[in-house]
Image (cartoon, rainbow, N blue to C red; front, side):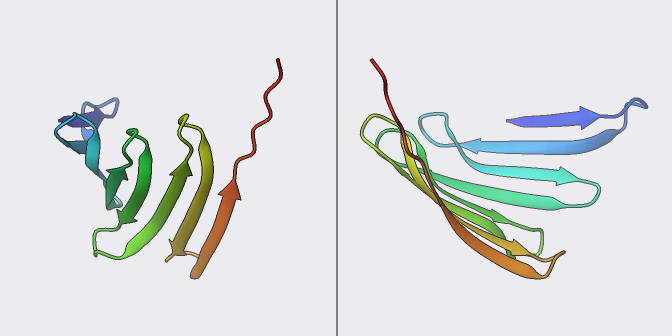
Length: 104
């Protein structure tokens, strides 16, 4: 599947291509505009949640990586994020933990 975005002059300014798996979920997304072309790869866990995601630039350099942990009920528990900042020149790595509190 492909989506093309046009400006007011009907010129294409962005294109997004999706490659689905056998269940129709995107496993590869290519985002392209006049300045960049990034490719995102995704993997899913047994429950269908995006468990792993990597993004590469047009030169094949890793831009970002996210590893997610979900519980059996589909609640996101943890995200481990790596950002490689070619513009800022600083790589960052952090972990986000989700905590849930339920009231009855």
